[in-house]
Image (tube, rainbow, N blue to C red; front, side, top):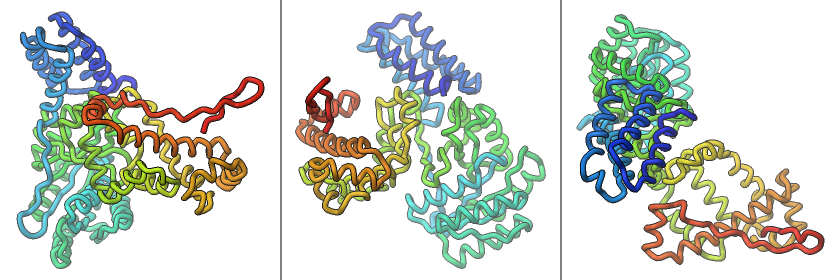
Length: 467
């Protein structure tokens, strides 16, 4: 990821925000850096040229050169231009006003289309509370039908299939079945080919005529860079796509696809997908994506993730517990389960402003740590989970818990320490006034978590023993 768009532009942000004054020469140098970042990210050359010209034109205005903190203002101009290139506003799914809605998915083979359908089905059911059915009409790749059926089974979504038959017949019969069984949304998986050909396009046109879809979603592999935009334009010119699902965002070391598709093909990006987990599909928000690219975090998406996965009363009860002295290992266990419902920890941390510089460390966060902690807590007795001081006061108990969990005593001690720190941190935050909380929101790195107390040991060296 060393040469990725995000890394290069975040370096530009750090340099720019440190400038108290800017000259025309400074802006020229900044634009050269931005231009290189975009070209290395495989963004279309015309877009790069227009992008840098627009930023330069605004940055050279008198207001920027003579204004307060001009470096930050230039960063804001770059942010706004990134947002504009990706589409300014987010575009949601279009459903039928009455009756059943139909969605047709198209894309090249290998673009992650079938997996994206599974994610989309789960997203629609979870966010819009609609009853979803899949139709398996990718008849040129038998594995695609099996894959969709496996995904459907795992998600509890019915998959209509007739094996290897004419796709047009399958779609016609599938629609009738969906109407008879009163499904709200039908998503059709169509044939993906290695290249775009006339036979493929004709079949897709026929399926579209039968389906009369509310949405025609094109899945595009983000790793294709600017070539993704050319593929999108070709599909759009012949079929008429209404939106794009950008897949494999986590594997994109360049990042040019998101910045090229909207401008070249004129199709809005509606969703972005990363990873294999079924809950990794996100609605695409240009402004939030621009903030992420520049390392500014994405608190709005984080808040949405929290509210959709965690019950308000449950969260309130947990906060009250954490601020009291009764917070124990059972509560810690519940808290970990709540966090796990939101997805991977590295994904959650990536939304937080100020953590852009720690990208490498974040990517190495091991979600299995939760499982290890859970095993340690499970190794305790019910009484020990309720009253943490029993473990604190007895080295024999710590040894027994460590042995039962198959870990070292130092692992048990680290867990004890994290419990104490959490309680102290919440107490510290509960004593903050509004101004301090506002400062913390603007600069999360300014918050210093309380350090665990250290007790001096006796004897030679007087080594420290951490509680």
